[in-house]
Image 1 (cartoon, rainbow, N blue to C red):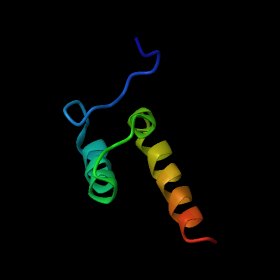
Image 2: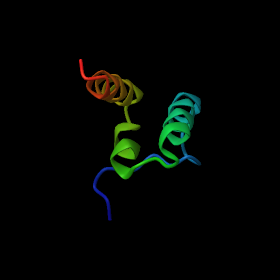
Image 3: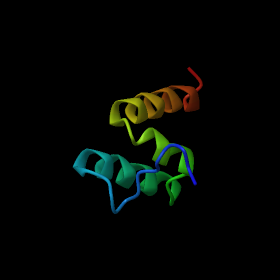
Image 4: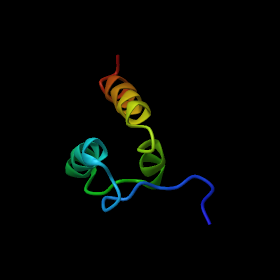
Amino acid sequence: MARISLVTAESANPEQKALYDAIHAQLGMVPNFLKVFANSPAALKAFLGLHGIAGNGL
């Protein structure tokens, strides 16, 4: 059993669902560690922003 719950597409609120849709569009899936981050949409947005910066080589 997970100690930290995963946010699923079915249990996501509208803000989480929008983030899920964006992640799914890019990756074709939502990795479990991002499902954990989705418990805090602000943390998920921060991670995705950092990932975007790192992906651009800046």
